[in-house]
Length: 320
Ligand SMILES: NC(=O)c1ccc[n+]([C@@H]2O[C@H](COP(=O)([O-])OP(=O)(O)OC[C@H]3O[C@@H](n4cnc5c(N)ncnc54)[C@H](O)[C@@H]3O)[C@@H](O)[C@H]2O)c1
Ligand SMILES: O=c1ccn([C@@H]2O[C@H](COP(=O)(O)OP(=O)(O)O[C@H]3O[C@H](CO)[C@H](O)[C@H](O)[C@H]3O)[C@@H](O)[C@H]2O)c(=O)[nH]1
Image 1 (cartoon, rainbow, N blue to C red):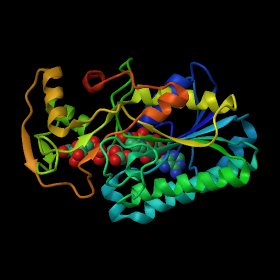
Image 2: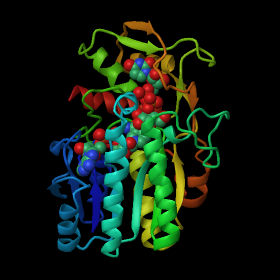
Image 3: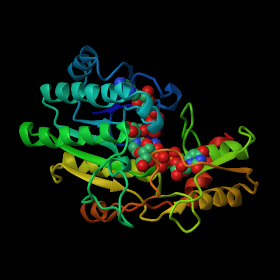
């Protein structure tokens, strides 16, 4: 049985939907940013906080948990600058309680949602896991602190972990039943689609003077279904004892600029966007594109779905 912490959120709910086909699943979520409606009905659901040791003691006593997948976090970069306490408390301190308690119950397999924000502002075209990590905001630092904790615990307490550094998660499940739901929404693709549905007046492009071919920021968009598959591959490799504690990038290895993403959304939806050119958003690196070679070599994972699939699936979900 697998415990999925944060399984009512955007990415966690997509992993749960795939995982319940193969495993028994318990979701723990405090619903602070997640939605009960996103959780697959085949999963058991417990509403509670991962920092509450008594809740965790009950779960680990009552269910036969083999491994933990951990998606729960606060993840708004801007908010992390305004309110760093919230980020260090929830993303680091509460995660520490979760890991300590699972180890107490003899559970030592852990999959962690990390982020490309751990790299900060890289100087290379394609970022490999070997690049230095110099996060430039409290959100990125909170995730890097957890990676450090995991590494130390793995050395000291026989913990086996996989930290997956997602680049830009996007897209929705092929069923159209679940998709990206954040409130407030800050991510580019859902914002564009909400605008094209008439729910927002326009789209702001944050910065047109970056050192990129069209002046707008470049990101590596990776389909949430591909992210879900990488979690399941990682879990299986951990369960078979074939994988030592490690970190993998999750990306396509191909970048698209903000202007290119808007264009792709216009073409796929057949609608024209009203664009407002705005100042840079603070803390945005010009370009973040993954080298996905390590996970390809070690687990055979490559992203199957490109930007067109991402936008099509997200559009189906937003229309529903
Ligand atoms: N969305 C992206 O592009 C992206 C990119 C890189 C990394 N990540 C990471 O992936 C993970 C999932 O992101 P998401 O976009 O699905 O976010 P989300 O906000 O949709 O999901 C997070 C879930 O965790 C729950 N949660 C938060 N704190 C909790 C706590 N203390 N106890 C129990 N539940 C708690 C929330 O209610 C929510 O359901 C996060 O850790 C995020 O930092 C996301
Ligand atoms: O209305 C908008 C929203 C976004 N953007 C731009 O679009 C790009 C993508 O922005 P998102 O907010 O969609 O995604 P980020 O790249 O900022 O963030 C994502 O990747 C980060 C890693 O760098 C973190 O992991 C974070 O959790 C995750 O959401 C950025 O250049 C941003 O400035 C706009 O121009 N207008």
